[in-house]
Length: 445
Image (tube, rainbow, N blue to C red; front, side):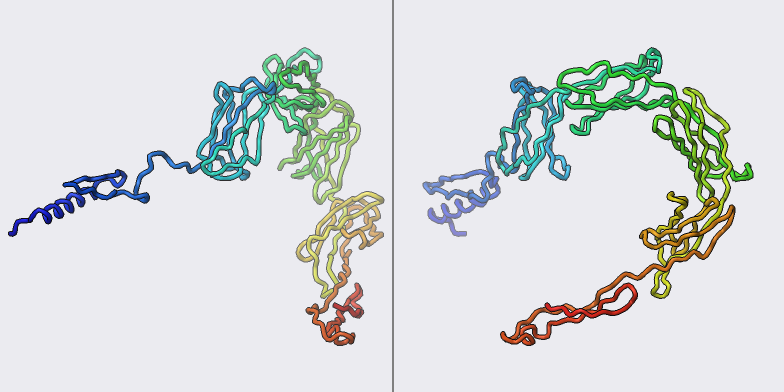
């Protein structure tokens, strides 16, 4: 083997050393001096690792203070989301009220602040750019107010505990609820300033409400009290006229003397119970599909007591049936409302089936007008005796008018001639009136 001479030896050694250096981290900048030869920079802009992180997201910063403009709201929770409700991040305000939320993608955000004892605040359309800080997203939070009071029975002494008291303000969207303690007292806090309505609906008592209750920031509105009378109730059974066969799903409606109403539906045994009724004389009305409506007036309800065995025996009554169709081939009409009117009151209602048929049931003896939903199609003077079934009260609805024709694009001919100007664009559509007669009208494009 021939020995390497000086120049060749240096070249080979340098080549081997450079090959070894290729295995070193590409993140290092290597400069090599060997035998007086300066090696070229082995790194480039493309393979050099950055010494500091590259900013990929944006930042929102700000400060939260009380409405006095100076007192920081420490511990306030700040949340960032977008219009679709997607959550992106949150932060807790520091002792001086400042906060910072990082790594937010470029976009438009909603920033919400919640803190105990303060009204929730929100700012929308907060814009964030990549690698930039959106600063000055500050909040001046308003302290909430409270309502306190006591709920007792009508004597004003006996407390009603463990019942819910609800307060709401539709204008400010303020809302709060709480359960009374054993002595009947309550406190609803964290309410936005405004005018509130309170409602109490305890079982066994008449529900009550109060409106126009003022709530002021950082103040308690006291003595919002309620004294509730115990309610009465009515119970019984609903059967057919024989007094034995139960009627299921009958509706029992009680009209109270104070303008209120109570409602119940009979079960499979025909039994019902209407509770929560105010004291005084009531009217009780019972309705059931296929039966005549029955009412009892002068039913006296007593506070804290139940009237039992208030039973109703319903008669199946009379009925009117028929069919609704249109002139074109006697096509049946589904879903058409049909009403029976006795005097000036609606006594029965039905909706047509797939075949256009209908049945008005539970009608009492008398003379009726049967009317379709359009109000223009009426059959008058249908007489019923007790238990009578009248059939064949049919309706033939008029066909709606229609217009047919052809629409073409306007093309302009040589000027000076009406015929060439419209270039055959005159149209003569067929117009049908409600009796099927044709009329012709000439239209120009």
